[in-house]
Image 1 (tube, helix red, strand yellow):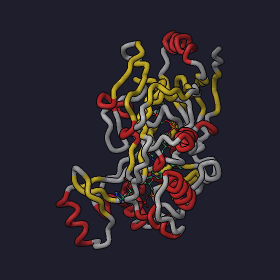
Image 2 (image 1 turned 180 degrees about the vertical axis):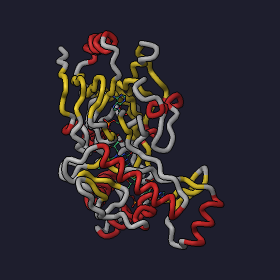
Image 3 (image 1 turned 90 degrees about the horizontal axis):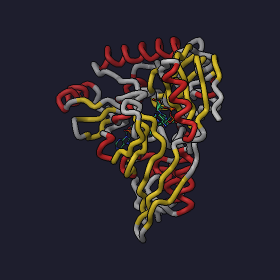
Image 4 (image 1 turned 120 degrees about the vertical axis):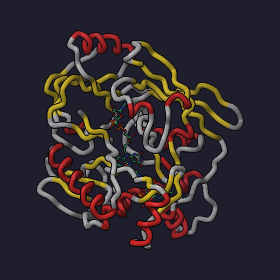
Length: 338
Ligand code: FAD
Ligand code: NAP
């Protein structure tokens, strides 16, 4: 049974804690209610925002149309062999709880993605990634309702056009309602430990034999030490994607800034957006209501009741200063709506 609220406060539904108001808001905890919801949306000709944890969103102060919080639950085993298992997970499950659940069951692969806030349903949207692992590596299928074709459909991994923090879903906002995600996980743990921060933590603990649990613990500990908890200091994680520049552009930057962090990428060289922003002196900057985190220049924070306009103005100024100094254009990672 659906309850539709009007002028609903979304402060608790976005981790940046922008005090946004939705024209209409509802909770979708049962997919059987979807036809009724879609009828309501069609009858009133509403734009719709489907949300999970609201941890990758920059909301306007007034959000027109209907905001739907998806909270469906369920983890079902589809098939398993000695080597692997295939599970179907409802969109409304918490991402981090799923990672923990898989670790407990000894279904491996997701350890490096521990502690990423938000829902399973949103994980394919920006192809969540951390510490050299992307969720696309484990997704077999994404089950969706396609609002353009008015039908449920199953999309194979290759159909989803996964890329670095990007997918078909991110590029077609509102079209696909992700109802569940099918993952293939391994029964053999294979460590992915190429990021220095994880190795440093493991070395400091004297851990030589790397287990999945040790990896999970390392990721959780390193993240807790570096990133602000949105419940204590509202934020939307990394505010800009790491830019990828051409080899020529990188070489000229490196001549001017010999210590510029850089990582090889298929289409050039990946730079660390946080480093560029830090060099421009933004780390720890405090404006009236919003600011830049003191330990991580890539994270914009909402100190007290900041609005979308405060965040947008700060982001514009940061982008401008990075462009002026490095001639590099930063692209916003969280989705601005509308
Ligand atoms: P929301 O913010 O609710 O939605 C994000 C987008 O997905 C919106 O466009 C929304 O419409 C769409 N969407 C959500 N659910 C559905 C659905 N069921 N069907 C269709 N569309 C849907 N991201 C990373 O990749 N790596 C990280 O390491 C990482 N760390 C973070 C750390 C912090 C402290 C924070 C605050 C954020 C971090 N993020 C990270 C960003 C964010 O957590 C992820 O992008 C996450 O997947 C968003 O999930 P959500 O449920 O909160 O999505
Ligand atoms: P970090 O380890 O301080 O590294 C800084 C940046 O350098 C990262 O953005 C990372 O790129 C890149 N990097 C570092 N080592 C690398 C390697 N061996 N190979 C390729 N790239 C490397 O980063 P952090 O800020 O503490 O974050 C740790 C991980 O969590 C990163 O993967 C980051 O993406 C992820 N994270 C994401 C969000 C978000 O909201 N999207 C928020 C917090 C953390 P990549 O970002 O491409 O990995």
